[in-house]
Length: 335
Image (cartoon, rainbow, N blue to C red; front, side):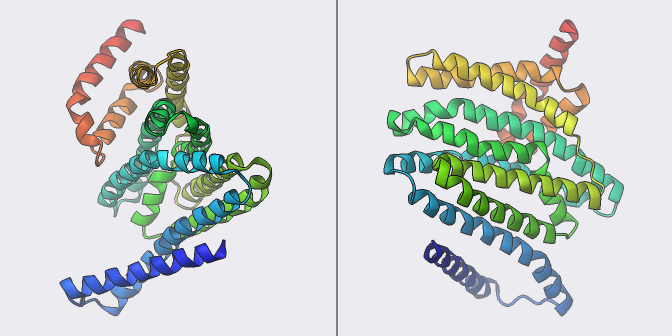
């Protein structure tokens, strides 16, 4: 286990050195003051440690799993991890959107706090919807790509993604960007350390009894502990108010749509038809239910936030005004 960890550490360090050498070759030696260098190192070192912790934890957990489960279970476990990659892309997009928007509010503490609070709510609703929408189609996508022998992967992935849902509800993806914006990256490093330590300790306790399921639970527990830590730091230290009630209200239509889409898809005997049906049912039902749980102001802000998000914003922008108009008309008739 520790040999794998050492290999990852060495490889990551060598890549960092190679990047530095290439930078110096093509751009020359940067001219920075001693104070500027000190600030850059002080801000970037916790982020480097956070990234390093994220690289070290998976091989350690994988080693524990490999010692206690069959090759078939390991295959399903790895497919579950791989299948969650789109969720990582989605969360990265939302965090990037916040990281490019929040710095514009620097210099006005109240506006920055309000902006972080609003973005946290928008990101929570958006991410829970996108995550559960993807999870609704994931079982059929896995079978279509990997075959029916990997049907266990979907259940493992559901446990794994539960931790990301906790991050979304508690606003972690936006609050992490807020810490970077205000130059408090030490919290990012602390949270990454807490997350990594929690995952490893939980895996040591749970993998022995539950195998791959225990490993996935360990990741979710680590995310929950990290999200709770971020939430309390943001609220107590920086007075950023997180609208948990609004986040939970936004979660309800996503959960209802996920349950309905999954239930209907399981009654269909064709994998491809189940994939298409689950996706369509989720999208239609979710878009119809959402206006009944969010007021018009939040819904408009949410749509605006999504359309400004990298990678996925350009897909949604053409439908922005049409959707808002339809939901206002539908909601006005039914309420």
